[in-house]
Length: 126
Image (cartoon, rainbow, N blue to C red; front, side):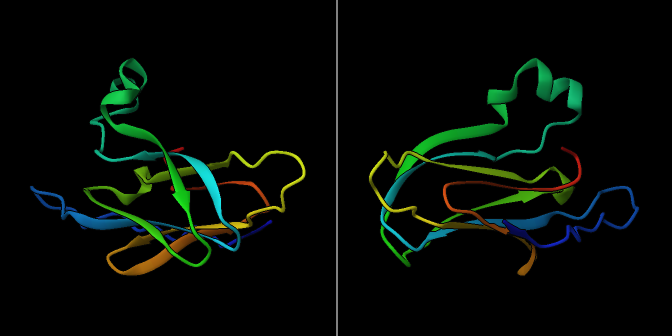
């Protein structure tokens, strides 16, 4: 597995923190179904997340064709909360789909990872 270093930045300090555009992207070398788990809305705290995680995340299964990206965009005050987990549902006897995940903040890729089947891109809040 190759993973890029996490280089997410915190917003400048002010009365209203600046919102950041966060984009999750998944591509794969082979066709496959993937179970996805990703943050859609920033929780106010870890305690709030732990009390009701599914208020802040989405779980879904997607079918991905080779080279055709799946993309989701959201806005987070602190992009360190970004998390994107990918699990292949590939069964034995099938070639590894070799997924690639990325998290981009304000148009700049800050985290990426490649793996044969399962991977996770995340900010430092996790």
